[in-house]
Image 1 (cartoon, rainbow, N blue to C red):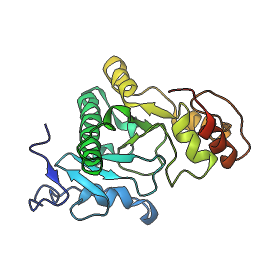
Image 2: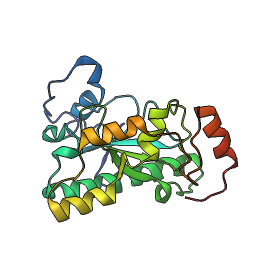
Image 3: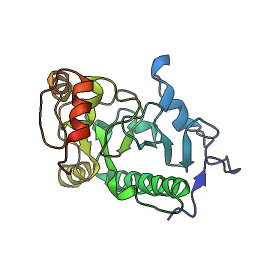
Image 4: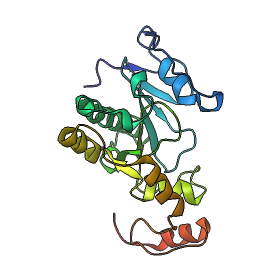
Length: 219
């Protein structure tokens, strides 16, 4: 499946420079837009083709955290732009992302490809940046970028929409069925709780992490 893919180091940059138009967004939000438009040589990019880009998250919220970008600018608004015809695209985003994660893990772990089945694939109900992007995260949620209650709750609550559920919604109803503003209000009010056992609420992130170090409940 990955044989026809272009790696970040590939000399065939015509794929990366396929004249992908950039949507008009504020300068601070341009990060993913610029990478999707021209991924060749960009920091963190592991793989790309004419439709997708796979890269490591600059501020990882788990020990393994990848992003899979869709290069189609008509989907820049995020999951709310998806329709029934995009179900296969979402499936491919998860498949490709897991394959690249496995390849990179194997390079680090002496050929062992153990990480891909453990990665959760999904979208934030209300994305923080334009460009449709899927998160692939390991279940530890202990990345160097996991610093705030909001960070935690965007991955440890229903604000994180599993890719399989998104595909099912697209096929059943032709679109995702959540309200972005309701989801945003919910995550803003959510307490810090363990995503394994539900214990909490915890007043601070260090107290949550201390609990996680001892929690034996499997996901």
